[in-house]
Image (cartoon, rainbow, N blue to C red; front, side):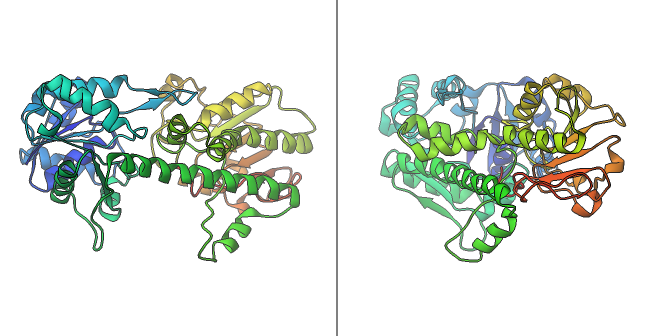
Amino acid sequence: MRVCVVGLGKIGLPLAVQYASRGHRVVGADISPEVVRLVGEGREPFPGEAGLDVALKRAVTEGLLTATVDTAAAAAAADAVVIVVPLLVDGDGVPDFRAMDAATAAVARGLRVGTLVAYETTLPVGTTRGRFAPMLAAGSGLAADEFSLVFSPERVLTGRVFADLRRYPKLVGGVDADSARHGVAFYQAVLDFDEGVGVRDLGSAEAAELAKLAETTYRDVNIALANQFARYADTLGVDVEQVIDACNTQPYSHIHRPGIAVGGHCIPVYPRMYLWNDPGATVVRSAREANEGMPGYAVERLAAAYGETCGASLTGARVLVLGAAYRGGVKETACSGVFPTVAALRARGAVPTVADPLYSDAELTALGLTPHRAGAPADAVIVQADHVEYASLCPADLPGVRVLVDGRRVTDPERWRAPGVARVVLGAGAGAGAGAGVGAGVGAGAGVA
């Protein structure tokens, strides 16, 4: 087949490469000339995606993958068009459709009879049929039954896209039965699956749209519940990690792990998108608010421990935040907890700096953060991202540190048994004073995307 992938970002480019690996001729379309240039040269525009570098070079070298800024022309030459363009929501959960509308209009200009159009970007329920189907028809001059249209949500995590494509069923929902059959056949032809995994027709575009929002919102609600348990455990002197592990030995319990923040493009965003469809969903709204409150809670725990250990408030305290990324090992700051954590520290009069092994000082500055100068003293430290490098940290690595708040349960308690230094782990129970090396707060990051 001839396939056009619109949007060569962290999901779209691996998809284009995957399709090419099955022998299909793929054209990737993107509005960024720099991205198009790099892809055309067989160079990945962003690091960190397992297997992408080698597979991209092979696809380009074999002539199976090219790139262009002309989306309409790429669509006109394609048998199938897959659209993976970002859709963001504002603080009130209102979607910003401008990028998606522009991509849809460009595809419509090149749309031909018989072409399949598949949206993989997560959408509010009803968007494929109610918004994009009319736009595609109007922009192309085709009748609704002259092209196929499906929604098929991406269900992968950046950093492991190729592995996730194999292990999870591909969900498809068409605007009609013919579209669904076309969509199922397409994904069967372009994807590789582990044994027992394949393509699943959900019966309608709306069902597929809801499935994506539901599975992501579930994770946000689950993490919020774990965070509530962690905060209560702190008042009891109980380690919530042990409690959760015990609960999850029963097959009907699947409690996620609490942590300082829920970040990324998906989990913090899609519950708000769901609320745009279903504003009366009180459970979803309360969960989102609970998770948004966790960075502030971590700073509260720091202030309490710092007051106990140092006999002072955080005013003027030098606080190092470890981790700008929203998730360990991934160079991405979308909805990262670093921003509300820094804001909460500044609100208490602290002087926050940030360090991250994946980011240069210039990159941190461009994000509006103050880089931490290597070797500079810090009065306190908050672990915001679960980078593996932080597991080996000890007080000697951080001159002057008196309090550590581990928001991801990644540091080694044995390494932090030092006189005059308090280690606070969120959700680990009642607070520890100076030198105890064990602390209070809200637990760590598994289950946080």
